[in-house]
Amino acid sequence: MHDMRALREQVDLLRDAMRRRGADDALLQLIDRGEDLDRDRRTLIQAVEERKAARNTNSQEVARRKKAKEPADELIASGRELGEEIARLEGELDAVEGELRAMLLVLPNVTAPGVPAGGEECNRVVREWGTPRDAAGVRPHWEVGAALGIIDLERAAKISGSGFVVYRALGARLVRALINFFIELHSREHGYEEIWPPILVNRATLTGTGQLPKFEDDVYSVTVDDLFLIPTAEVPVTNLYRDEIVDADMLPKGFVAYTPCFRREAGSAGKDTRGVLRTHEFDKVELVRYSTPEDSANQLELLTRHAETALERLGIPYRRKLLAAGDTGFSSAMTYDLEAWAPGVGAWLEVSSCSNCTDFQARRANIRFRAAKGEKPRLVHTLNGSGLAFPRTIACLLEHYQCSDGTVVVPEALRPYLGTDRLS
RNA sequence: GGAGAGGUGGCCGAGAGGCUGAAGGCGGCGGUUUGCUAAACCGUUAUACGGGCUAACACCUGUAUCGAGGGUUCGAAUCCCUCCCUCUCCGCCA
Image (cartoon, rainbow, N blue to C red; front, side, top):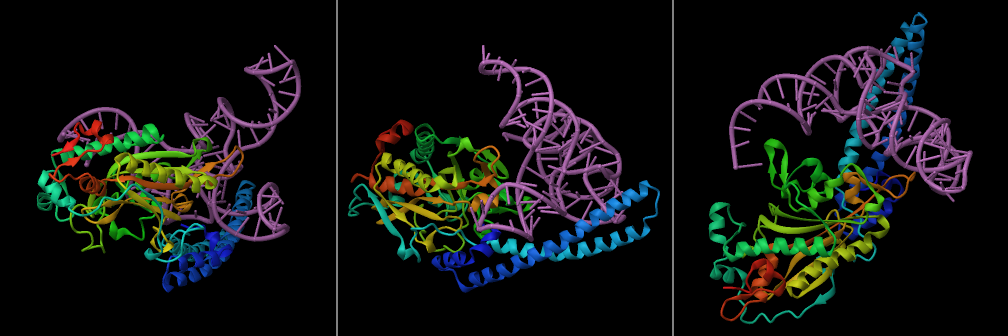
């Protein structure tokens, strides 16, 4: 969410930012409407407050006269009139503020300088690591997974439907190993505090990180209780300090959490349907950072390096992509995607998405810090990134480390957690 | 799920229609005293949104905020209703 003041002080900047994202006319018109609403809002506030001030002095005078046993009937009558007028004006103000807020809540974040304008085709590869394995003769992970008896998609479909996975035997143990490996890496080596959050969250929490109100169709909801299954641990973890003022000496602060993630994937039917590349439920270890505004650009580099380290330890070749404005997520000002090479699928798979959300989520969630005693609280900057998403990581492992006999070599780093050096 | 008790500033805690943004205490900050520390004493201590003045801050001013939302009233922390949360006991449950 943007500051209301942006509407009157930096409208052109806001419009330009929306254009860079490829926003449609409707969104730009919404901004025009916002300008009017902001003006109306301030006029109404003045009118309301003027009358409230009058009511307050009036009431005080009533109190004084009652004490002095003087008559106050005409003051009580004028107070009643003021009250009616206030109620009427407040009704108008509520309508204006409601519309303004609704408008601000659906406007995406402004992208950072250096983020290319345009859509997906303008994404830029900014870094590469490792040597992608030749695709020749490498079987896709769904075949290997089935052959090894570690991925069972048929039975998952029976239990839940398409887009679900059963991991079994060494596959199940692999998931457990990945949880431990990633969590240990980020907590012990990278200094993140380990968090085990709820995965069922309320409306305010999802609004804080930006999934609501705009993307309600994408999340699973438990309507009887108005709760939602999280699409990513970013949601509960970023909201840890919602409506709080954190200590400045706590910043920068990192949190790492493993959770399952749930996504309806409405609108992506038919995409990535094979294997485990796009499922309704998947596992992920997520990194979240709070930082000062001055430091957040550096913190994004740091966080991205932490995610990359996970891939490097696993020995999976990857590349880092700077996303163009049109491909950058709703809450993000700047995003790097990490794509790992899957020779069996013959594609680069997005295994991590690292974003600097600047003050966009912090304003929605009201997360602030006080730089020094006596200074005004300021909004923190929030960042998040996968470290890493499991299914695609597993796909890459099964394909990258595949041997001609159908077995899969376990990378060194995972062996202590898995207790074996080969999946067979 | 049932019965009860409660939610007040950074924290503890008073207040039970007007003089209460809110006593008192703790903590924090500034100062006096002091060789240093401690103690004592004095002062200060929120946030948001408007308006004025500013290059901007500061400052001045108004309004709001006592879990949330409604209602009663000239006037609500205080009375009424609904909801949320916490605690205790009972039931149920992994």
